[in-house]
Structure formats: structure tokens, C-alpha cells
Amino acid sequence: MMKKIMIWPLIVVATMVLASCNRPPESSAWQQKLKEAAELGTVQYTVQKVVSNSDETWQLFGDRKILISFKAIIKAGLDMEKFNAESVRIKEDKKTGKREIELELPQPEILAYNIKPDDVKKIYSSVSLLRTEYTSQERAEIVVKGELELKNDKELTEMILKDARQNARMFMDMLLRQSGFTDVNIKFKQEVDHGTQQ
Image (cartoon, rainbow, N blue to C red; front, side, top):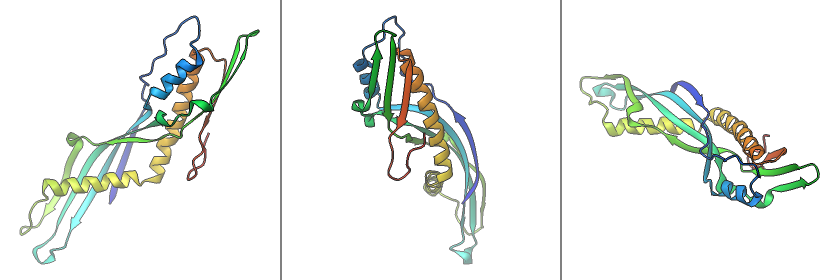
């Protein structure tokens, strides 16, 4: 049972750095840079969640209850292994120096959930006299259930992916303009289940 969720978004600075130079690099060079980047992290959220468990199976001997709080770090972004360099379209006008580029990026996805042991806290417990305390394994199972609730939270997931999409577009636009392109058109690959949100 979910009691409370608190979210702190944090935009992640991408580790890919494009060195500036007078002459823009060849298109094949930056395409390779994108392809080699297995994951382009664009957004990171810290989510605090409180989960409860009430065990009244042994009513003859009393019940026991527990509240556990934990923080989960959720990272979302682009899996650049799914990037198809063949989808890139480039137009150059040698007279004006204008360079246009159009490319299709993979849809953002959740890349990782991370819960550190130090971020898991017991905030309340009540155990009847004839019952035993929750074991560390039982507490771990409760946290796993809480993590599963986060993963199945469609509203939270959609919000994170929306931010990841916006940040990915902004970062890629900046990177490509630093590469010498004057006009940048970025699209996201359509997904059968979700459709495209641009």
C-alpha cells in the first residue's frame, strides 16, 4: 500500500562532450559518437515512498504492522544502441554555408531503478507480544513490492519519460548545432504501444 511519494527531479548533464573547432566534424564522425553512446541519460528523479505491511494471519497470537520509507533513484533517457544512423538526412548549401539535419531518435525509456540500502528506513512497527519482529528478508520483500508499485505507476512513468524526451531534444539540438548544423529537426521513433509524443 502506497502512503506517500515525493519527487525531486534532477537533469543529468550528459557525459558526451563535443570539442569545439573551426571546421565542423564529418557527419560520419558524430554519427559514430551517438551510436557508441550506449545510454544517453537525460533525466534523473529521486522518489521517496512509504510502504506498509499488516500481517494478521495469526490472529490468535496477535498481529504486527510496519511502515518502511525508502528512496529510489530513477534514471531515464535514450538507449542509443537503438539509434539508426541511416535515418539521418543532411542537406548542405555550399554557397550559403547552411547545413540542415533531420534525424529520428529512439523513444526515451526507464534505464535504471536504484535503491541504496542506506536509503531504506523503518519508521514505525507494532508487534504483538506473541509475534516475532519482521526479519531483514521480510523487510527486503516489502521494499521490493514498493519498488514494483513505482514501476507500475503509469502516471509517474509518463511524467518522467516526458521530461526525458524534452531534455533529450534540447541536448541533441545543442550538440548538433555545435557540430555546425544551422537547422535541426528531431523526431522520435513511433512506438506501437504509446505512439509518438513530440
